[in-house]
Image (cartoon, rainbow, N blue to C red):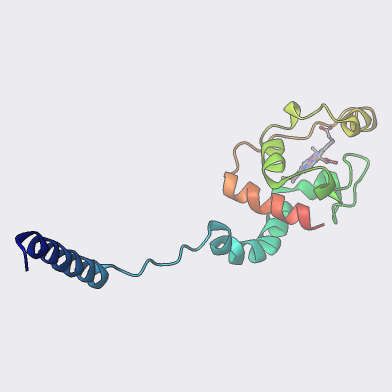
Length: 137
Ligand code: HEC
């Protein structure tokens, strides 16, 4: 063996050792659970909770016992046609800022003397449950 060949052999040996060491010390990466999957159970129970909260807060006093609408406020059905969860939460926090839609022109003339209250004092998480429930109707 020439000197050069020895060097090459030494480097190859070193490389092999490092490679094996790397192999041995590498930890298996844990699979990441996506956020949404973790949230699913609360979404399911959120349906009940959302409805309970709607009754407790008294949305029904204007929107009707079954949210079917009344003289005071429109029915709350098919909302998923118009709203996302986040938009609904924002709406509940500040209804006055969401009056661009044609439906709201309609509402304004129909429910002239009634103002949809803002619920900025209620925890966003709870509003989320309410929104989730409303989007199932
Ligand atoms: C004082 C009566 C009143 C109460 C209480 C009330 N609302 Fe309303 N709500 C209205 C009126 C009136 C409108 C029609 C829009 C407007 O005038 O701003 C409305 C509109 C809405 C809309 C929009 C409907 C659509 O077609 O997009 C949603 C959603 C809604 N209310 C949810 C709620 C929820 C949830 C609660 C309880 C946390 C609640 N409201 C409590 C009067 C009320």
